[in-house]
Length: 329
Image (cartoon, rainbow, N blue to C red; front, side, top):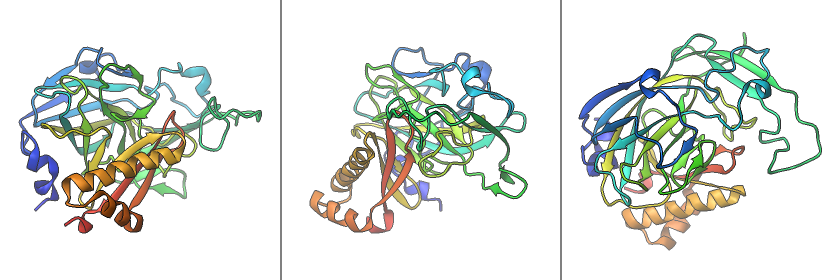
């Protein structure tokens, strides 16, 4: 029996975990990709709860970096990076509801070498940036192209092959009135770069606008905690999700569930504020749904909580705070 049969999505969702209809959204179907999260773009697809949707995502650079001799600053059109599929309108979703997204599969597509990582001037965790300004000269630009295979892994070089551990780097619902760059994470999700947003997991997103308006893209083939140099193994994919709607489940920040844990996700600067958001939301979730008082949850998380660093490079840093389901039974 799959753990999904007992997931929050299956127990409380309108579709009860069942697939209502299957959609395939190609690049041609998507047409224009988006670089902003907001309620102002026309939906590319309208679905009912229970829809299973396979989308063709671009990499974060929309495929513009093709060779290791390319110079990113001369090729990329900043800030038009991180193209997003969507928005997908989910019938019945209203402000105060929750959109549940089960990530079913991510597989690479396109010609090899399909994976790209690089060094970009004034971007990364160990260099000066526009927000962390220093006089040191930027690091030299560098591009690395890698072969990505779902079975054999990510070939870093002749000696090192990394496991293929794909996840959705950027996913979220529309803010209520703001239009916010897809490069930024926040309460609605966005560019969290959190490796736990992976096949098998369900991410729960707050609905802020009618129809939820789901965006997603920026899939990574591999990434270490923090996405240190700023660029993971970016690759184009076919990503399959299933959406459901949980009416009246109201919270502000994204949540996640997998077989082993529940997680809350916070984004902010400085990094400790992102951690505080994530842990505060987890305390409140444990108090509202799992029978703890806030003080009991606070004290238990001090002993058993876990923190996952998503990114330490984006306009806001992202951390996930989690606790084992075994401690919630």
